[in-house]
Image 1 (cartoon, rainbow, N blue to C red):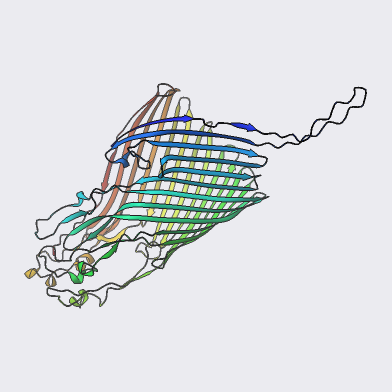
Image 2: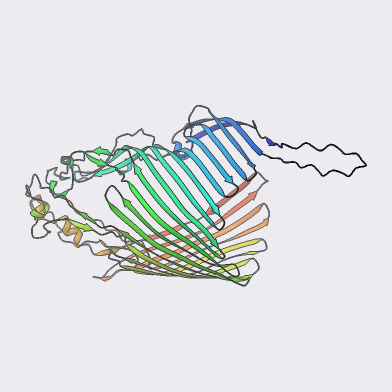
Length: 603
């Protein structure tokens, strides 16, 4: 991608300042010298001070290749574009205003803002901006792959619009007004965010082959926020309440797509109809449909000042987010508190508390159970084909794994043992309780020490942290199935051999990417022999391990580990006030240990 641009501008069509004074009362004529002097005449005046500026110019751009690399949020049309910016500001008594306008010669590049202040009693603001946002286009070619088994047992792709350049226009309108009444301030705001244009949507079909399909999907998204609330100050106590009403919807129609036939991948027989929820026989189905979302939230914040610059902070938030299209809700309730106390001039103490809960609606899933049209199971559902091994129905209630209640506690002691030297010692405790997951509770204990210091021409900083985690999040029974059938199914008939559900149900090993022990260190030392030279040596190290997965499972033990070591050095040389040279080198060595399990299964 190459971009060449030329810009010129002419400034000052205005840059003016004026003061208008109007005298209403003429001066009194001079009295005779021998008489008593008359009183001084009164004069009334009104003044308006204003200033402004106009900038205009143009820009020409030449681009080739993928513009998103260097112009993700800018207009890069080949034609020369005129640009103009106008600003004016001023005051009259207690009234103040500030207005700015910018247009880059294209409707996709414009900004407007106005700020009004009426004697600090009422403050109002209105802003609007618009700019383009270029999105990636995935060619999908990397997913293609074949198999020597014959038939259509492959992974392939179809890009229905390979030449598309995806881009959306982003617009944001923000307005608000504040009313100040002594120690109480009321505020009201409205924010409107729009995204319109085209993006890439993807879907996948299975069975006959893994077929990834890309589409050009229209976007017409609107997010609208309405906020209202109040702030109050009573002595050392400050309070704030905010109510938010947010609505998000996309009025663009979803794509309609007919999926591939669900045939057996090797023999191409139509025997998989009863194993899928949909295929070509279901007709056109919607793809990339966004629901309408509505959110309500109430937030209360408080701060209480303590003697010696100490303070107690806290907030409480309750919100409810609802998928209006499906009628599903997501509720959040949380509280946060902080206590901060300086201890003389050399130390401080901070304590934090946080607890929140997430409650997501359960969903009843009505599984579609079609019948097979061919093979030994013709005319039967999948459950009817295996009456002794499977339930009569696959319908189930989905309980959300997002439901959880984390609790966090932390304490930190900071000290300044010497001039320009600071140390921090901390301890943290976290417990995550889950309602609907096999790992019901995860507990983490953390200790850390960090510091920074300046010693002559050298500056140093470091941080060491160690975590001990009990029962980290993992995927239970994720891999390593038992060997149930080490031979091909007799007669190449799936009903007489190993079935998918039996193979997956036999998996034994737990897998995770979360450690039970995690140690981390990073540090850097900077030498600055003069104002134009700096040399920094830095080092980062991590050792994360989990050796508590399936310990002693038939002599098998699944482990996970990650170690990182990354030393480096950076050099900065400032040649003058306008030019600088920066060079650096970093060596990064990372090792990852985990178990991979590939299922050997065909037909």
